[in-house]
Image (cartoon, rainbow, N blue to C red; front, side, top):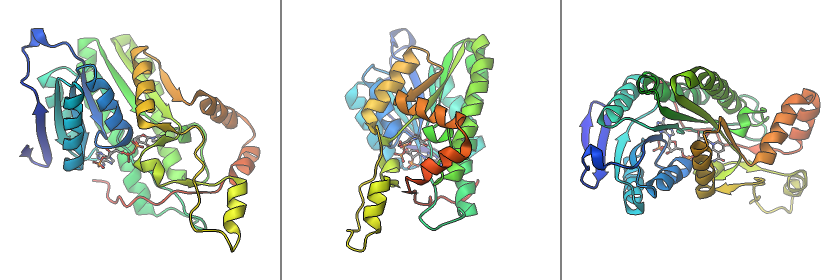
Length: 305
Ligand SMILES: NC(=O)c1ccc[n+]([C@@H]2O[C@H](COP(=O)([O-])OP(=O)(O)OC[C@H]3O[C@@H](n4cnc5c(N)ncnc54)[C@H](OP(=O)(O)O)[C@@H]3O)[C@@H](O)[C@H]2O)c1
């Protein structure tokens, strides 16, 4: 692995074939060291894709790259970088694209943060760090790819949002606001870039079983009452309706991208329920949502870079 400034670039690859022999798609995926990003990388690896994988944890990223090669990827480069660093991200996207044009760019890296029971205000430093990753980090990933893709007249950009960006949830105010922001951005880019041959997809996952969702505890009215009893045991099973495995989420996202869907939301019933909630009187929806107390641990991330 070579290190230039604060980007570490590794390459775990089979010998790179001559251009005329290359068949697979070229993808760059952020947040590829874990969860949805890693599962997406594996799904495209099975088609023989050429992968550029980005994350901060070098060890987990290398493990993901090895996994992808074993699954059939033509190559799997690793970029150890923080999406908050705009200059670094611009250089990575440029160099990955120069090596071979990116067909699909997936801005997936993200962190969650929220409120614990009794906490009224999120810690401002945690909120700023989350905004820098979930909003500025997405902009830093996508912006440098727009001109090269438009110049080629082809390419796909997938931006990972969340159901929490469709209708806000009471237990993670800043996270919901960040996701709503990237939803709007993706919708706007899609309309604008289609004329240049570039397709933009907004990904709207519900619960997906990953290290991120494992940290969130959502209670039903029943389990909340049971947990409040003095005899209750400490562990409460989290209620995460429709939770999918990361493999299933990756399969749905990949199918949606192949079909050039503008919005890839799953599970569908949850998406339409959230859309309906956004449409109903706010006070009514707030009352319903308060019946499902949740605990979203504060992120340990700090700093805006
Ligand atoms: N899981 C769900 O239920 C769910 C639901 C809706 C939306 N989402 C969204 O899906 C995306 C992926 O989440 P996940 O559930 O797969 O979470 P995860 O397993 O915790 O993975 C998050 C990934 O993002 C990377 N990352 C975080 N901060 C980064 C930074 N500053 N720079 C570079 N990479 C960074 C992590 O890499 P390092 O650890 O190596 O930094 C990791 O690879 C997120 O945008 C999330 O908001 C998830």
